[in-house]
Amino acid sequence: MNVLSRSLRAGLPAAVIAVAVYLCFMHKAFNIDDVTFLTMADHMLEDPLHPASVQIVVNGRPPQWASNGVWSGPVMPAMLMPAVAAGGAEWLAHLVMLLVFLVGIFATAALALRLDVSDTGARWSAILLVTSAAVIAMAMTNMPDLPAMSFAVLGAERVVAFRQQGGLGRAIGAAVALALSLLSRQHVVMVLPCLLLVVSAWPRSVSELVAAVFDRRFLSTVATMVGAVVLVVLMYVVMRDPRPGDDLAPTPLRAADFSLLRVNLANIPAQWVLSFPLGLVWAWLYGRRMIRSWWCWVGALAGIYMAYQTHVFHRHLDWMPWQGPVTALGMAVLVDTVVDACRRRDAVDLGLAALLFIVVPVAVYSHLPPKYLVPAAPAMAVLIMRHVERRSSPGHRVLGVIAVQGLILGVLIIRADQVHGEIGRRGGTIAAEYIQRGERVWFDGTWGFQWYAMQAGARPVTTAEPQPAPGDIVVLGQEGWVIKTWPNKTLLERHTFETPGGRIMTKPAGFFSNVAWGPLPWRWGKKPLSPIEVWRIEQPAATTTP
Image 1 (cartoon, rainbow, N blue to C red):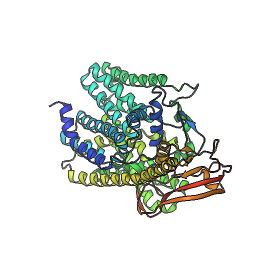
Image 2: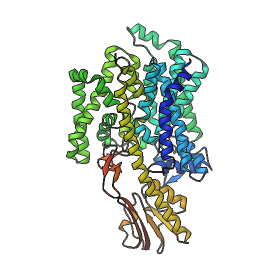
Image 3: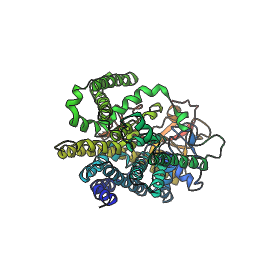
Image 4: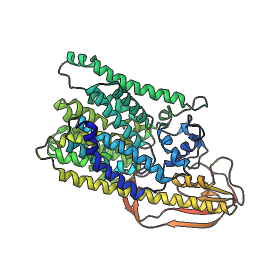
């Protein structure tokens, strides 16, 4: 039986889980950054070659070009074009994400098989991927992290296949898949050097290293990766914003904020414990060895220091009793993955361990939530199963328990996100009702509320002109702030959402932003969610940025 057939059989249980979650949440409302990619997709229906040549309102500030604030490429908005063309059909947008997710699931199983994992191990690799809380949660959003993951693991599998079997078709497939990944999230470029380790053998001497570097098959593999980069560059040239000097490519440089480096770096090891099964599985596999390893103790102490730096940023010392141990464990595990691979001189394991760190460049961004680690999740799953199968007793029951708790957490995150999205959709419905009455309607807010309000025909309120005139209606929704200080306005309606439940954007839970809210992916909370208010403006007032 060939690898394709074996990977389809191995990935089937994980695929069933993914489809079941989709069916439960297929009508989930758009939320958070979905609005950015939906707006770009809407623009691409008219101008498909220039996705960044559209202005987007962000948090009430004057409209900015998409190229100034989007740290991703054109893949996600292109994927959303069918849903936008269908009137913003949520089920269609989520269906496209599901199909891409299935590609990542089966590619993960295939990669595991090509890296000498058994059929059973490949099955568990796919299951661990799907039941990673951050992965399954992001699969029910319309942000580019999951496409970046799926195309990256497909490209990795094709690279390994080319290295093992050769063939121009495999090389072209690898280059195209990797290019699509880079055009989804730019930091995935860090996958390329890590893959060179995965497809290499540990050299026993300098001469053997030199020979390996100049080996024809190795140089062909490098050429495949160069081909992926060339494709990305060509796409950026073709899709360059027609305004001089503006396009998606340099966005990471503009968005860099080194003041957030400490809190973002601390969230990397923490999330490998909180939002992915790596921390729990590795501690189960090698807890005793890690206790005896001074390398792990150095990593743990570094983790405690990093957790303390997060406390300094958020000013929440009460988080330290749980944040310190979690970050310490995460750092100890990450250190142990690298040290173990080096001690055994296992280039494949070292490459897979290196993939766990590809998110480091994002640490200079405005936040580093668990979604940015999602592209490395397949490497985590395959690495885990390579180590599990070295045990005399694989312990699949333990893996099953860890997978179930990860899936439960992921579903809880999706449910909490769904509640936020429904509030935004409700705000858009209210805006539509006032427009149907003949009112001139504006909206003040962001996230899913912004998308649904725009679809209803409402105009955004910003700190710049134009602004609402006396008599106009303003619907105040999620994260709205501009009109709150305006003195002359009359409240017409107020819709509150006070039901206790899961929270993912309430301190210390910040699944979508560790900087804004904190490192936990989910928490139970009783604090009311953002209300929807309807105001009639009597006289607008000057505003300032928050």
